Amino acid sequence: MTTHKIALYPGDGIGQEVVDATVAVLDALQEKAGGFALETTRFPWGVDYYDDHGEIVADDYLDQLRGFDAILLGAVGYPARLPDHITLSPLVRIRQAYDLYACLRPAKLYRGVTSPLRASDSESNPIDMLVLRENSEGEYLPLGGRYKVGRQEEVAVQTAVHSRIGVERILRFGFDLARERRKHLTMVTKSNALRYGFVLWDEVLDVVRGDYPDVTTDKIHADAVAMDFVRRPEYFDVVVGSNLFGDLLTDLSGVITGGLGLAPSANIDPTREYPSVFEPVHGSAPDIHRQGVANPIACLLSAVMMLEWLGEKGPGATLQKAIEVTLADGCHTPDLGGSLKTVEVVSSVIERL
Ligand code: NAD
Ligand code: IPM
Ligand code: MN
Image (cartoon, rainbow, N blue to C red; front, top):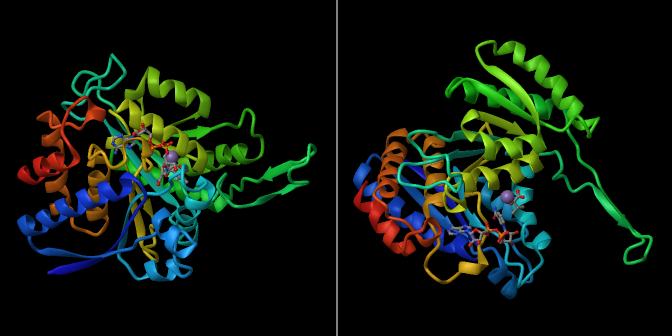
């Protein structure tokens, strides 16, 4: 029996609720599927930890997480209690310090789920795309500063860094994913306005695509991609974008496939030197915190991605199937128009494992 060491980092708000829900389902899955075990360790970091310790995470949190096989994260941030740039920085740091450069964010319209796009339903007009977000550099590097702070003439500089190696490796990762899917890759650019960074992206695409003649490619400016996610979402297969474009576009890909309550993500270090982080795309949703109505499915689908990454493809497929049947059977939380509580969706999934 293989045992995988999993760090649980529930974080804030509904992050804790969806991680609790996911642990309950994973416990049931271990019993039903057999052959593998997850040994979990829970870390209490977040705004509550801040109240007790004066910091969001332990000083050595990166060392503490280092030895795990994977990290399952709920969500971080609670703006009413602490500014976001403080609560969110440990998460951004994990991604950068562990070089989790590939952030996969699939968005699929499942049977039984209604898209807000009237023309889309899973049978006649399927949406099934995977946004691959560059996760280690780009617009998210903490490079910059503020000068003449608080004065009328204050300036702030925030520098984006796009490296040839960084762009090339995420594109190659995207091409490899496209080969396992519908063999089409769209690169998000903005080279019409951002003449250094995104012209580099364009040039690297032109080089790399030559190695993947079996994959069709195009590049579309980020604004037009946003429009096309609404106008013709079924067109997209693998969509590769920079850190910030990937962030923006995955709230959109999430909502057109039923909402953030269904949108999973995986922050991957393809070299496996560091533990990868699996987390829903959504945040801590303070507006529904403690109401017991958070949709646990985004976190459950992130757990499926985690199981696949750990090599547990059978149990991952079992969980994926149970989630799909749960959705198709109309077992929905209020964000999907249903009336079930988080715990009722958990029971529904467990019944269907
Ligand atoms: P959010 O994703 O938390 O919520 C946006 C909307 O979607 C809300 O109406 C919320 O109720 C709904 N929603 C989100 N997840 C849901 C779920 N599982 N079930 C049902 N409804 C759900 O975004 P926000 O309100 O902009 O941010 C809240 C906090 O979360 C902020 O501090 C923000 O910075 C942080 N945040 C964290 C992450 C992360 O941890 N990866 C991601 C995004 C936002
Ligand atoms: C996400 C979030 C994060 C991001 C925040 C929490 C820093 O919005 O994972 O999509 O911008 O990457
Ligand atoms: Mn986001």
